Amino acid sequence: MKALNAILMSGREVLPLVEGGKGISVSNGESSGAWALAGGVGTFSGVNADSYDEHGNRIPQIYYGKTRRERHEELLAYAIKGGIAQARIAYESARGQGRIHMNVLWEMAGAERVLHGVLEGAKGMIHGVTCGAGMPYRIAEICAQYGVHYYPIVSSARAFRALWKRAYHKFHDWLGAVVYEDPWLAGGHNGLSNVEDPTKPGDPYPRVKELRDVMRDECGLAQTPVVMAGGVWWLSEWEHWLGNKELGPVAFQFGTRPLMTQESPISNAWKRKLLTLRKGDVFLNRFSPTGFYSSAVDNPFIEELRARSERQVAYSQHKVGEHTEPFPVGARGRLVYLTAPDKVRAEEWVREGYTEAMRTPESTLIFVTPEKANEILTDQINCMGCLSACMFSNWSQNEQGTTGKKADPRSFCIQKTLQEISHSDRIEDQLMFAGHNAYRFASDPYYANGFIPTVKQLVERLATGY
Image 1 (cartoon, rainbow, N blue to C red):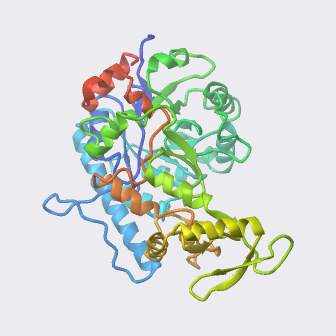
Image 2 (image 1 turned 90 degrees about the horizontal axis):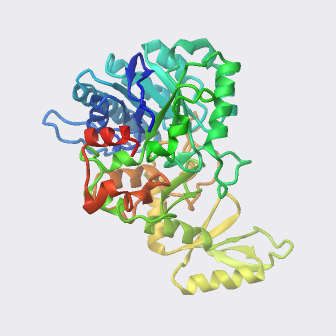
Image 3 (image 1 turned 30 degrees about the vertical axis):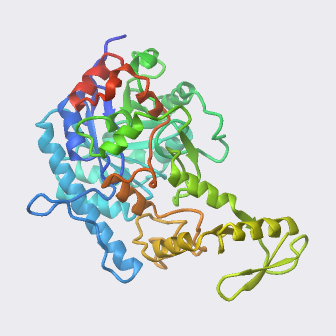
């Protein structure tokens, strides 16, 4: 393989190997500090990161507020305290090597407040901020205020052009790199547009070349690196990107492979699960309360969501067209109208035990068990406002505190499940994000016999091309 030359990022030459940030404590200070110590760019998650008491014990994120707004404020306090704690751990672990970045989601609750709070409280410890999930226009201004480089995550040249024209051209000195996150291959939330087919992956090369063309020809950013994220496993498979004049300076982000390290905070049960995945076990879905596509492991958690949506029929409040068959809904048995075939299906689901019909924002009913209905309603009531806007609970961080739409029972509380899988061995009945190459753990000889490397060993391995 071609030599892996150092690249300038966040004011220092580092290996062009970047740890991808993974939220809710999956990328923490220990893992990111170790990655930086190995000479790369370590990235801890600033999304509801863990914090600790004076004895070093993790502080459970328990909410006492009686209203969503009160719980939202508690959540932001946890997020800021946790971000500062993880920044300190990462910075001290890195021992002055590499670079330390924080990853945030623009659509997370109070993103700007969290950024200000963490960057103020961890001055000098964070060298860069990566930010995606939405259009983070203000990330440039905020990072420049603290003398920190910013790394927007985009999935197209068009998205970066819009960000540049609206805001980034004013703060170009602090633009550390542009992260191209492949919308078909990356884990977590994905930036597929409405015109892109989720079943037909695009070749990343022409998309990144188009991004570089915009950066060079329209923005004067010929030497600003592009970070390729999503689907990167062996660098030998990307050798033609190295030293490529069309693409310019390139680094590579690894999100899934760092899960399988000694420093990775995920449970041993999660690591064992990763070693058993087969091709196709990670797939794109639209269940997330963010409204984005996301890539997750197909497990019982996803299967239940899929089945929930499959037990779904359209209804009308009045007799209209083919909606002529009355059907009672709720404890009071209020009538709605279904088509004749849908009424037959609904009555069959009821006989199977899915007796609770729940209304969705799109004038449909889904059928669930009484236990599942109670869980859904309880989770919606306990919402702490972890997103800027949530389809599941109808929370919004606007003045009204609501999206103005009916809460959608086809989705789920993402905060609840990600906290659970991050801090327990319960993995099958929780949301498990992963990149689409996660199945390669099972066939990559590096992981034979269940071998789990240290971060240092993994970085050294990646530098060889494998």
